[in-house]
Image (cartoon, rainbow, N blue to C red; front, side, top):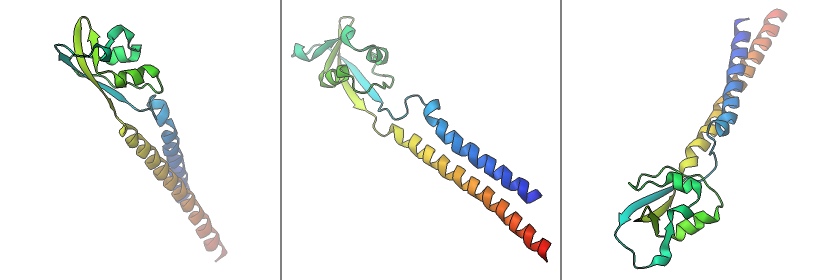
Length: 148
């Protein structure tokens, strides 16, 4: 009976690990989206006013991320035309001050979470298969010893 309980424990733990892999997108609400970072540095003036966008014209998520000190928070916005305009813009005017901006794409951030999910699926699946194997081994061994 000891091996049978071992197999049940392995099967349950494996199932829980696989289920936790399914919860990764719930825990990380921005799963699968590309993070964008806005780098801003103050400048005195620009020679071309067409490359300047007013702070008030920025989408709310960009306004929240914008930090005049240059330390922006990651933004998760996909397919927003304002993001394309910001990508083409070189300067932002905020409270009368001018900032040179660069928009960076953090394309590799999702790789860790994807690898984590595949790892959890693999480990959970192996544990579940091991639990089934231990249970079958116990049953086969029981049936061969009872026949002898």
